[in-house]
Amino acid sequence: MEEKISRRHFIRDSVLTGGALLVGASLPAGAMSSHVFEERDEGRVFDKELLQGVCDIHLHASPDSRERSVNEFGFMRDACRAGYRAVMFKSNDFSCHDRAYIIRQALPGAECFGSICMNRTHGDKVNAFAVRKAVETTGGLCRCVWLPTLDAAYHYKCEGRKEKGIPVVDERGNVLPEVVEVMEICAEADIILATGHASPEESIALARKAREVGVGKFVVTHANSHFWTMTEAQIRTCVDLGAYIECCYLPCLWGEGTQMPQYKRQGIDEFAHFVRIVPERSFISTDLGQAVMPHPVEVMAHCLRALREAGVGKRDEDLLVRRNPARLIGLDKQ
Image 1 (cartoon, rainbow, N blue to C red):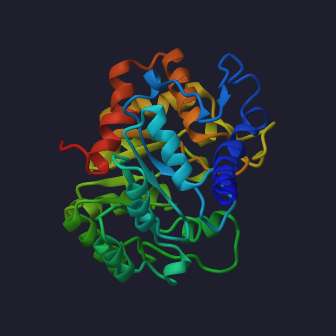
Image 2 (cartoon, one colour):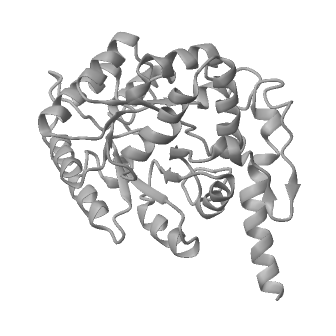
């Protein structure tokens, strides 16, 4: 009995407390002041009516090589209670589609998916063999391949690092053969290929090649974020080439006065502008799980309220957080 109680308290403390205590410190002043989230023995109380059917397909959770505010099992349990339809986890260093298989055994009916990211844990270049094995893993739950993120050549360049990151195009801007091979795997498996931390110009080249290869689910990652931000013209070019556009809510939380002050905060009006450009081919993710940020489910609810106040209608909301992400992870046909 003592062991069971200890395990229960460990899970509860690591999943629930880690994000909850940071809400006031991490969000812009007064951001959630009008919404109180009550703590009970069974966990948080969420706005299930607001969140019904939501799919968040860009989340970071432990176990990971970076500290996270939630763990995958605990978050999936919370998401189910909140009325979410599906979740897809992302780790910059490790695969998480295999853990999604285990989580589904513990939480029957949970639509939990994973992905794989082409960073240095898989070698110094994009690793098509690792992608093939991820796609072949039991359960078929790897629903996205992210091209290099934290180890991307463009990311290293923007940070002024001396070493070379992992490239996706050559000196002339042509997509590299190993990336094309990954595109072919994604096209065959009908799963997402996401640009990771590629530059806007690289993303356009990747979109063009993905269309040529036949990738049906090509995603431009966080097109509204930091040094990956695209112009409206660039976004429309990618959409014309068949891409979906990801808009992350994380930039609306960081900035001055938070525990991620090194980044410029994005106002809700600017965020709403991005999601309105082509809502038919866009989706919203939280990109959350950072140890200094609040619970992702609470933030998703805050995002939806803020967008409604900014004038984003129910039709577009459904496209952005329900229909489009559900199609991308294979729950719905087009």
